[in-house]
Image 1 (cartoon, helix red, strand yellow):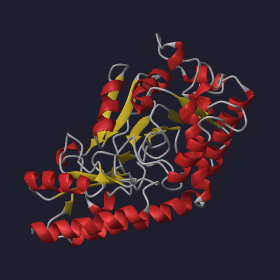
Image 2 (image 1 turned 45 degrees about the vertical axis):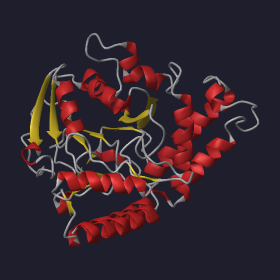
Image 3 (image 1 turned 180 degrees about the vertical axis):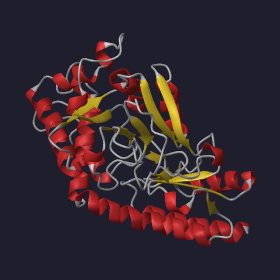
Length: 360
């Protein structure tokens, strides 16, 4: 069977070259006579895999030397708890709520201290990013937390909030490596890899070193202290070894594409094909304010639920998978991550035009 165009929000499409390379090495990685799946995480061969992955990510994102890169488990959702456990020293933190995951992070933080919702776009179903130029930042806040790109609602921070000197922590699960990032503007960036980087099961945390201490909330388990993992170079316990290996291959693939500036250019072109069509279409319309549109996740609707369902069904039959919107919002959503080829978006728009002609 031919490969489909997979528009899933995550786990999502991976670069075909990477999948082929992984397949070629499945039974024998680099002359070891075994798969990476079978390899000890304490072996020389694996040490090289994880160290190279970190080195390539540092180069791609231009990560300053005073930041640690940690390969962890538990997905971004576990970070919602780890962040306050490790950093809520004053038991106060500010949260900007721009979507489902930002909201979950905010709710989780309330378990550990006083979490303040200082801005939100929930009043219009998270279809925009609130003005964050002059927020009521709490004087004693330990940090300000954002979700940089909202997978479900298709919005993105094109300008970072003014945190008035407070540390900024960002969940970048759905737009990491899609464009250049100035890491020094953040105290911490974390991301689940299953959208733009690799198979589910790995989460990467990039943390400024001065924040990584033993001074954590009482009762924080050893495994949930960043210091535990930082001191052991992400090898305190058995890491998600195979997933990290695939992530390492994707880092090399992104470098081969020309790095993050080239990715951004390509992603902008790709997104423009779809957004331009949505803006001119009589049947389909985008659901996000133009200035806040994501380059990665594009939600759209016809305005008629039956027609939406018909579109999803016919699209699937035509080889376009996973276009149904998140269950909380309905409609459609095309996730067009780094690994989605330009051709996939062009073909989707072609199909949408045909559908519109037949169902106008």
